[in-house]
Amino acid sequence: MGEKAAKTTGSPKALYVFVVIIGLLLIAGLVYAFWLALRANPANPWESFAISQAFLEFRDIILFVGAVLWLFGTLLFALELAGFTITKRGISRNRMGVSSWGVIDVALAALSAAVYGGLLAATTPIVIVPGFTWLRPANSLAPLFGMFFGIPGCLGVAFGNLIADIVGGYFGVGSFGGFIGNFLIAYLPYKMVKDHSFASTSSIGEFYLWGVIVQAFYSAIYICWWLDVAEGVIGLPVFLTWGIIAPMILLNNITVNAVLSPLLGRVLFPMVKGRGLYWRDRVRATLS
Amino acid sequence: MLTGLYVPKDTLFHRLDPRVKLLWTFLVLVASIATQFNCIKGAPVFLSVVVALALSGIGAGFAALLIFNMSAFLIAVILVWAGMYSSHGVPVLELGVFRLTDVGVSVALGKFFLIICPVLAFAVFFTSTKPYHVMWTLDKLGLPHKLSLAFTISLSMLPSIVKSTREVIEVQKTRGLALDRGWPLERLRKHIPIIVPLIARLLSDVWDLSMVLASRYAGYGRRTYVFEPKWSRGDSAFLLLSLLFYGGVALWGVFPYA
Image (tube, rainbow over all chains, first blue to last red; front, side):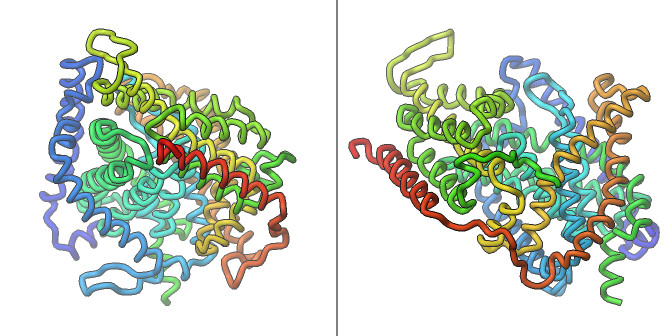
């Protein structure tokens, strides 16, 4: 299946290998930059962290770009739930909107949310630097749920994040950004990666591009743009939003999704497909 | 019966209509926003939410637990806000470069109340409202029924999923899995034997849940409720009191001499 997808798209393998290398280099670069910041300023490494500085220095540009991304992301969210999707030919119906959902879709959305939220609540974050930054293994499931279960999986991730906020005591106005932001983390690889099997270079390469790099930047900007714009209602200072939260989202999402998601995807894809729950198989069955 | 975050009790908050509780949460948010730059004005809102926790039978201990859970985050918020207003007002503490002023303390605590009060108010809502009534409320708010159904099921199933996750972790630990040893990336990889069994369970649960939903005709046609909450005089009185209290605090916050 993976080979077939690579042939049909005609994308060179070298490009995908290049994307994977870029993804891994990004992790190494982020970790190294944070290590440098920690050495320079052990009491507050975020102040010296190059990514935090970049976010804060170019905040005006990021706010403008963020507004465009936010509008586009929110529109995508609404469109997909309404049963429409953007294709090369324009906006068309996709038969995956909430009104077309059957009981399996409801069950998939509910269980993905419970598992994602439950894992976020039950697993201890892996601390990289005590008190400063950590990795959440549960986040590796977000792109996989989107790729395997389609829109119900994407919505499950959004609900799961919301539930984790409720349980963890973070539920508030800021959770709105996290809700759609997490939907997009699952949606981007679902929509943009052609081969979801993780069994070929093209599959892993595309995943690294959309599910690791683009997704991490998009979600960090989307979530933090909302926190910044709604500062008067949420109460987070700008330094905390762009200097700490945005780099943490970036560091966590890139690392966890680059390391854990492809390994899990390779193991889980045959199981999901074997159980008849892969979204393409279900949509095909509905159409036939 | 799965109850999720709901704590079954017979208290004032449990008897209130879910719509009233949601409106109360909204009023708490509005009052917190209006008083965010002055901790003295924000304090009554915070106290009222702690009282609400006590009245809902959850107890102020729950508030303390939630605050403890997010303590690192809250301390960072307080310090940053206090630092941002360190050039305003009269200094109360100076430790090297760190300067704390009365205005800084007031704003930092006001922001703390702005963050924590809506969180606690939503905690009151979810712990005192049955999942069945959460779904009813979401339906009344105009959310598509399939979405409110999926959300309510996931909220209800959370405790069992958390329990299963902890069981899987314990089992894998007895088999020699050391989650707390090794480099961060290695420790990340060690989560695969925890996540895979959980997803395997999810895949079989999906079919079971689908059959349960199909047998109850869930998601098709218009959903009706056997046990619909009824708006009582008590609900109206609570809403009126809340409007007066939080409205007054909000006015006090926005207009200093109101």
